[in-house]
Length: 129
Image (spheres, rainbow, N blue to C red):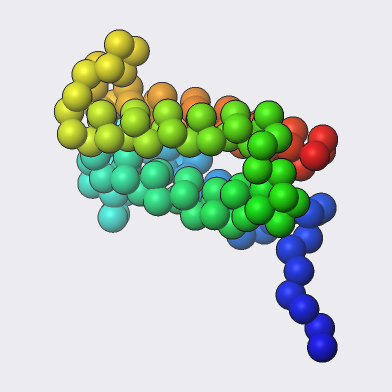
């Protein structure tokens, strides 16, 4: 009987494709371009959140669980960045003002920066852990 296993090495093409789509949506939202199904900043925030959660479920927390590295410092950094992304997205969506995120447009930029940090942490975790 052959078991399904998670490869802990090599690229994950689904996550890479989702990251490219997310980057395109981020660029369009920050440059003021309208996309067919993403009509405004709030919609862009939600789409970016859903794409980020899909990437995390596919190659983030899934890899941490497969490796059993729940308490690894890079995994904890990923948890913190993910929580910050959720907070900034909620603030931008509901119109709350955070110190560095006064409006929805800046929330999109902040989510992009935090997501980039989370991707870097994920790459480092893949290389180190």
